[in-house]
Image 1 (tube, rainbow, N blue to C red):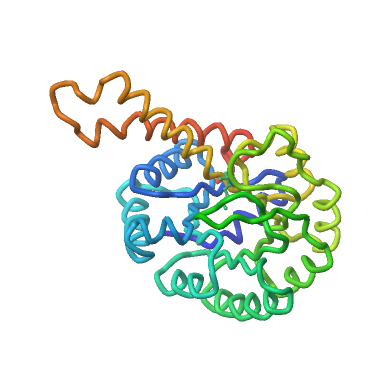
Image 2 (image 1 turned 180 degrees about the horizontal axis):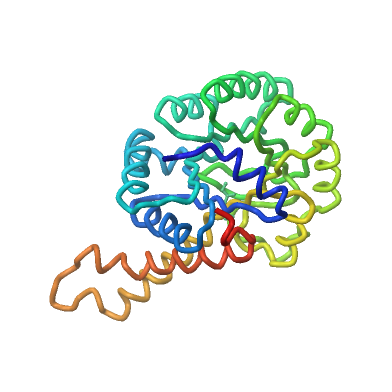
Length: 287
Ligand code: 13P
């Protein structure tokens, strides 16, 4: 059964580790992530962007697929199904469809409007027992064609949003989605520490988990990050393994182009990436 992310994040925060959010795009990714979490006895959050939701035939299809897998694969570790960077309407649609967690990304609104809309969604999620993530300070890079500029969040604005009763808060600290440029200045630990100081025990979320050096990940966790999002790294490993398989001509083995064979190396690559991240984040054995 899907669970809210509340309990797993409270435990992560207390135990000084982070739960990974891995974005899903299709059946293979979802299965690879769930099986790895189960094998490593780790809690996990499945992230779904609005674009990926559309690609997978809508939120109801995603809920049906994930719930089916939890049962058929006998998954017993805590799993949250979470809307990633949701709009106000998207968050409502996911709540309706059966997601156990949503992110409302109101970071592009003026702060008062972000507060208003977050407040309304917090009330709905509270009533239904769902977890909710809010964002302050845009996270840079490109996601689903939307390019953010990347900025450091204002700690006072973070407090305003945290005080609304959100479960977790994504605060921009110089992190960006996708690959980091050569001249990237690194994470602003000063901002992270200031945000945590203002928000007390609020679990903080680090977006753009791909390509952040290990020492920075560990330091971010020590300063209050309890959830780390990874998407691009799974895309890269999936694509590389699939490409290699095709280039080696193995999918032309006389059986035609069996999709189950074609996607198998990518499936294994995602499992390996997820395992590596769970070990780094410290969530192994914490289910
Ligand atoms: P990356 O694509 O950089 O791993 O970021 C994922 C993310 O933050 C999803 O919200």
